[in-house]
Amino acid sequence: MFILFSILLILSRFSTATTESNVKAMFVFGDSIVDCGNNDFLDTYAKCNYFPYGVDFILRATGRCTNGRTPADFLGLFLGLPHFLPAFYDPQTRGSSILAGVNYASGASGILDSTRQS
Image (cartoon, rainbow, N blue to C red; front, side, top):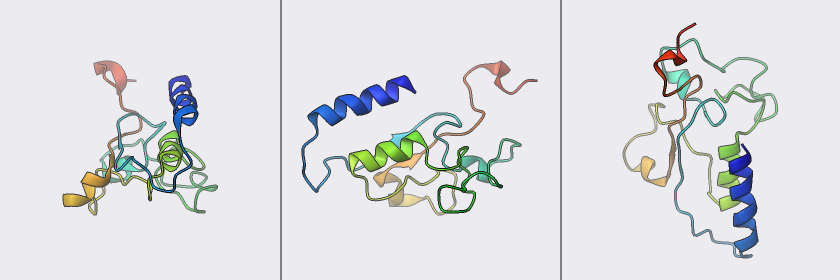
């Protein structure tokens, strides 16, 4: 989290007051901190598609593991992206829509074999 805020601070020092963003796409990899709902489309128990998740976002659960926006959502807004990144596993995220950016993050993910073990 510290790294993300450091990057935002550095970018804010060099940003200009233009209305058009130079950033055309963003691709997110990570775990539940930045998951925008990929787990809703996976066979897993790690889901966040029920109350109280999303109560501060659009008054419904979106699959985000927060009550509102994720750090990736805030970064996309800061960089001037016109929309929130769609979940990669959403059936509507296909074809050329991926070129505008996509979120691959999945809650409860990890690189170690022991990640899923109890």
